[in-house]
Length: 368
Ligand SMILES: C[S@@+](CC[C@H](N)C(=O)[O-])C[C@H]1O[C@@H](n2cnc3c(N)ncnc32)[C@H](O)[C@@H]1O
Ligand code: SF4
Image 1 (cartoon, protein in one colour):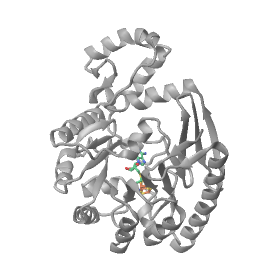
Image 2 (cartoon, rainbow, N blue to C red):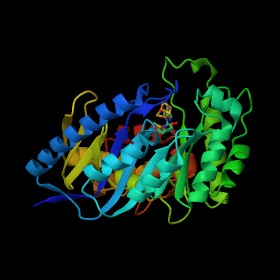
Image 3 (cartoon, rainbow, N blue to C red):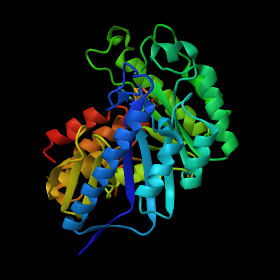
């Protein structure tokens, strides 16, 4: 029996500047020609390796694809040559949703033309804040004017787009960051989607001593969730909000534990063979090879619990024994305003989502 794949994540690991808070795999782009040639060689080799592995495992590409996501790093830096390269590499004709991550100050008219010509129909814009002071605090390479230019461009292209917004930013408490004012400005550009992240600071982060208190960030998150809902961007996952019909197809595939292939250094793919068998693989940064992890029924169910609880679709307990063990816990969560529904699916409120990790710990302590 063959398994079909219709989604791909491709990691483009270059940035013109390395933001000091960023956890993702990336390198500074210093010599664009040399580095992108090296990257394209890596991708060509990876593609052959991936094709051979798919053949061995009985996996095929679907005729029409559901999604491609070019993430990074800063994929827009790959420019027109990136679009030309992928046109030759990928055996794809029709893609329902093709997202390109673009950062302010890293695009050109020609770049947009070639990517849209290839099939890109969604942009994810790396803005993070619309306050010059906080862009500097975040160590971003772009100015506020460059953010406005890109947001205007997305609007003029008439393309479906999302912007990234960071909460829990250093100094936001003592300098009284006004996130609602920033979001009001964003809304003037008519975005279809927002990805909202809480800054995760490592112990060596240079601004670790200026982080806001957890309670402050939690109330900032709840305030933003309510504001976005009031303005027609409904929350469909802990970090994602969309106008109806503009939820990301690609992201939903991850949360539904469906197959998504991957290419590019550190890119991670998942192939689901059945409800009880899956393989996850992660590309090595320096070699066109990946490491494979096998997932059995219990790992798949556990991931499903974690991923589904993040979403507004919610988690469906899978055995009657689990439902029994959960009964008291769910009553307690209900009385604390953490769940909006408990049957048949457990759906968390925004208040529940903001403490998702501790709720997961409570579930694990029940031995689910
Ligand atoms: C890896 S970036 C790629 C997109 C683009 N280069 C940008 O800077 O927005 C994707 C998202 O991850 C977020 N991110 C990176 N490091 C993070 C961290 N330590 N905590 C929370 N979000 C982080 C970025 O802010 C961005 O919104
Ligand atoms: S531009 Fe994006 S990917 Fe690059 S270092 Fe900054 S946050 Fe990370």
